[in-house]
Image (cartoon, rainbow over all chains, first blue to last red; front, side):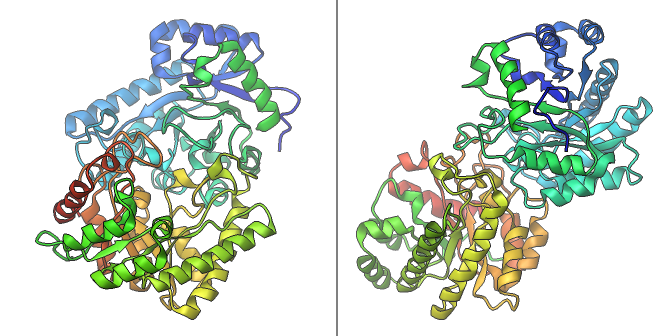
Length: 288
Length: 288
């Protein structure tokens, strides 16, 4: 397992972590100044500044993109909605390509309308079928432009409104079905926050292997957790044995970035951005 | 599948549902008055009134206990703590026997200290081993007095502080290991709130079968869910397809009560108790 204690060569910053403090161009600048080598930006943050401007900033600073957040949200209540989702995913693939991202992360969606508090139905199996079909269609497109798709299993508490793919086993089942040759075009993003509880985690990471481990995200699970979405902890402040999971991921062949992704309405989003980045660097060394 | 639309013969009330309104003796009285045939009380509610008094009230009203809440909480940071947990579980078995409960529900525990916000360690595998050993020891005792133990897999969002058994598959693995003959002494409590998201739910319910399906709990998953513990919804107000899951459970052989268990700090716990019970009756008919 790689030793992270001496530097932050393998730290990536998911730019949601400081989204409350800065626009993306400033985030890029602040990361580059600190010798951070990679980021993973969100589409809305890119759009707010402009894709071309961000692409130039990424090139100028030499930053890598450990991923691009995010495609997905495939389920819909009608054919028009399903088509719109596919169109949007193709745009996401194109943007990821423009930014030279390592992969497009897929948060696949749950029950249509649920995120707005108005679920159109309760048929989770239907949503899962739509996710399968949506990934299949997007994969056809993404293969052509050589942009890997990383399915991110989300914690089961997001099954209704954000993602109905909730375990590594389930995500890898989709990978087996749609990319049986393990071409590298389809894989998973392992976020410790979403999967740390899973009794089958180690086995499923081994199953995924090098070809399907496309991204590794870190933060921490706080006790108590006060909000389902925006109370993720800084690495070391919660109960996840992050080094153990990183050990499993590396043993399976993953040698990429550890991407810090923290949503924290009442803590990290309220602090000065430089303090947040400096803490990410310190904790990457001590707790990842 | 049984038709529940005409009566509430198979409704049970988990007494936490109206714990904010009434002491347990009053709850028993109010349930009996409404023709509710079963309850599942919590140990602290029993203790607050007195075990003998509650046992008498249960006998006098002819109420059945669909379960007794709860044993478990096995993990501890030292040998003394582990022993104290086993002692406490034997007392819970005895109380369940005194009350003639159908089973003792086990909420197995997570990382020791986490519920108080001070986890003693991050080793979830250690806790899982302690849970396995704790159930084994308690089962030895419970078999002697003929009290079935029902392992309740809790939603993964409770893995740290309440239960590190988080899927049906995991719970049934423990059952296979400790009661391979499917004697009926060890099984599972299926709570739709905890397991509805699981892509393997149907298959695992089939695997459980009649011998291991000891209890069936209902409420609903709200979108958005505003609190990890105390924001469970009334059946019909959320996104869980409860009739579908009940259909699976019944097809596997379960013909017992549907036990309503709602923790709801900002809604149902603030209403008049009679309104809550009447709503449980109505929703049992229309949404279960």
